[in-house]
Structures are given as structure tokens and as C-alpha cells.
Amino acid sequence: MFEGNTLRALLLTTEVENARIRSSSLRGICDGNMKSMRNYTCVLAMVLLFLVQSTGCARNDNVRQYEAVCAIYLDNLPQEFALLPDGLRDCVEITVSIRNVSTDKVFRAKLSDKNSFYQEMELLPGTYDITMVYVSNSGLISLNVESGSASIDVVAHRQTYLPVHISNQAEFREVLRNSQPKEEILTLDIYSRKVQYGEQIMDLNDIQTLMTFPESQHILHPAEVGYIASTSHSGISLIMQNQTRSSVSTSDATFTGVRFYNVNAVLPGGIGVGMSIPAIAHAEEGVLGTPGYCLGTPLMGIGHDATTFVYLDRISGDRVSFYFNPEDLFVRAITYEFAKYE
Image (tube, rainbow, N blue to C red; front, side):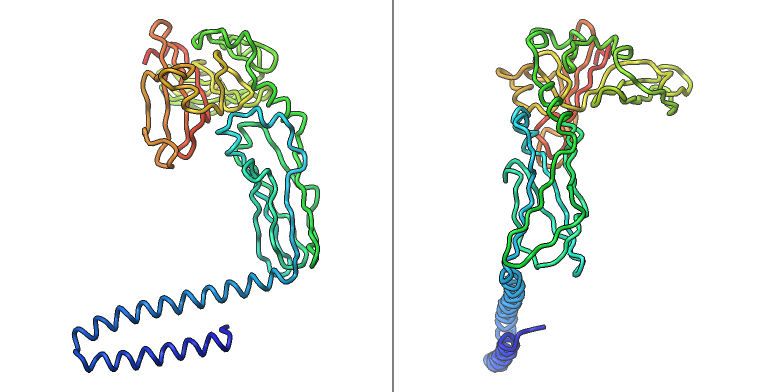
């Protein structure tokens, strides 16, 4: 509904506009009509903008008059969070959704490193259900966040606090500490087939015996590739390829490499998930320098297409690939494949 002044302004504008159009038509049909159309469009746009702004301001003023502020924040972020690479740390975002039980409207707070995981919202007084707590990129860093309450009461002229907390604090801190490379892994060659996981340096050839992998009955056709995720070590999968002429289960296929998609695995040179493009591929300062070749688009970080940097050992044929999402500038996943030669 329009306010009385707003309606009168609209009617007055219409009357003035009609009079101006009639006057202009007497001066010349063709020229007058063209000018009238342009002016009418301009005035109409201004009136609509005024109405939209008036409606918005009225609603905001209505909310502000109650001075009911809800502060949503993460209350137990460990200091080890700073150990993450900048690109990955900036992409961790916690979305907290709450619903007003009376109006059924949903409001969302987005907590990130940019706002110190703290956001205030002006709301109408009332009861709000906590409908969702979602963490973006949680799989890369093994982060779980939840709310300790099912609902909150937002009160007029008072600030209400809604904390969310990390539910796997010990595991999360351990993952962050394990992401830091040890001296031994820093000195090894990228094609040494070694990886640091926790306190242990593992040989990729023996990874099937060092970790637990379930049986997979998923069928692979000839030359098809499949993956088996570890149930004992997060962020690790076997790469299995059917190198026969008939269909076989993934578990019966040939073990051809390992896929890493969590920060807790560190490759030689301190390389891992979350590293930036320059840290790996800069011609002079990158750990590996210029890639052997690239797949996908060179326009990275603009949401166009995914990109893969590929490094190849001409002696062993081993291939290391780094995967970047269309919107990211940090490594999402790494694969180490044996004797590919291309």
C-alpha cells in the first residue's frame, strides 16, 4: 500500500505529465511525441525509484525502531587457523540461517575471516529457529560447525547473541598442525613417491597397506578410472584404472596413483592442497616452476572453467596434476599417477 503523500505525488505527477504531453502535441506531432516519450519515461523511472526507496526506508525504519540486534559469531576458532594458506583461509565461510517463526522469513549471516567470524543483524523482535549452519570448503580442512541452540528469542531494545562453535575442535586443530611440512619432506624430490601424513612419511607404493580402503564393487569399463576413498585417513583416495578389455569392479582394477583433497597431506617441497598458483607455478619463485602443460582455461579465478597444471617426470613417467576450480586461485586437489609418460 502507498502512503497518502506518495499517492498524491503520483497523481500530481501524472496530471502534470498529461498536460505537458497535450501541449507538446500542438507544437508538432512527430517531434513532440518523441520528446514526450523520452520525458515520460524519465519521469516514470523517477517516480518508481521514489516509491521503491520510500517502501524500503519505511520497512528499515520499522525494524530499527525496536533496536533488536542479533550478533552471530564463531566462539572457538583456534589460533592454528592462521596456519592455512591465505587463499584457502579467505574461502572458508560459515553461513548461519535463522527463520522468524511468525513471518516465516529467513535471514542469513555469513561469517568469514574478513569479518572476524562476527556479524550483527537488525531484526524484528520474536522467536527465530536456527535452520542451517553450513561451512563452505569444509572438506578441505575437516571443519564441522554447529549451533548449540535450536532457536533464539530476539528482544526489543536489547542485543541477542547467537554463538556457533566448532564441534570437532581437537580433530580440526590436529589437521591444521599436520598441514605444516617437516624438514624431511621439504628435502625430497616431488617424484620420490613420498607423502607426509601426520607424523609419518609414507611411500605411495605402500599406501594400500598403510591405510584402510573399503571394497568397491562399482563397475569400470575398459580404460575407465575410478576412486576409492580411505576410511582411516581423510582426504586420500586410490586411483584405480581398468586396464583390461572387459569390465571389472573398481577394487579389481589396477592401482595407478593417489588423489589428495585435504590439507593434512603434504607432498615433497611442502606442497599441498590450498597452495596458491604463484607458490607452485611461478617461473622463478614457485616450488615446481612452470608446468609441463595445462588443461582447461588460462582465465583462472573468474568462474569460466576449471584449470589443471600438469608436471611430468621424463624418466619415471610419473605425473603430478594440480586442480583449480573455476572461481578459485588455490589448489583444490592433487593427483600423483605412476608411469603415465604424458
